[in-house]
Image (cartoon, rainbow, N blue to C red):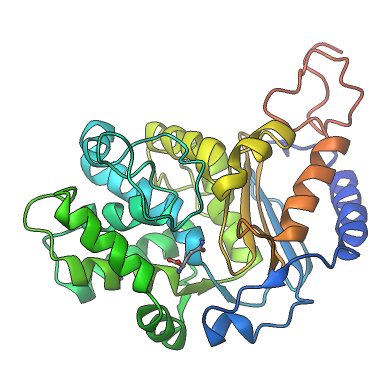
Length: 332
Ligand code: GLN
């Protein structure tokens, strides 16, 4: 198959220029609610890119590990969809942006969590993933799926992050008990193991290069570009990308959808996964986050990328945007 992006080297040059320009951004603050995040060098900055035909590019601290935090949420959602299908999953969790912060103690009007990309919904999703397994096998299952999504590279796990997450999780416990009281969980859900499973997923570690392959798997409808293996169904990927588009950037999701127009998911460790469907997946990491919990440089990179390239999902490909497009225009 010829490279999908025939002008890939030119795209890489363009991304290097944007990356350098955005490095000047020093806004935001490293999340410090746990010491393992608070100690990260705020100047860290990396980018990994993987195209749907497995061309790779990386910049800066692209192979330095960080914890996923909320970056685990879209993949857990995808795993729950693969296991139960959309109808069953959404009996328990909504698909509406909450407009509130990621850990707000609130449920939707029908007592379901608003969506799987905020904490309440992500905890609920954890109760749906292989609930019949004991906790160790359940976590192994998730690690195996991440390994496959990373083209065969097993992610890391920070036990220190996990222990800190568990120790400082009053709000997540409160969300869990609130949902238990409202009978939101499936019958027989064991609350504490479910919360611990959620903290473990947040403590999985990886880096921009590896995570770009995960994002590229989403960009290619569930086929891993590194191995050619089908890992997720096209429908699972569509649902996951839909919710990343509407809810993936916390209470900045509407703004992000308007200005950037791409499915993305951020984590408070400063990572942002970005998907340009049918083209490539991207992971940017810079630990200083804004008030919503989104990486400042990550968001700035996305904005600059979309003002130079025709990648906003609603940018017309019929011509006229005046922006660069490595695919060429549909009807030049
Ligand atoms: N571990 C964090 C929490 O549950 C993850 C949140 C995040 O990345 N926004 O509060």
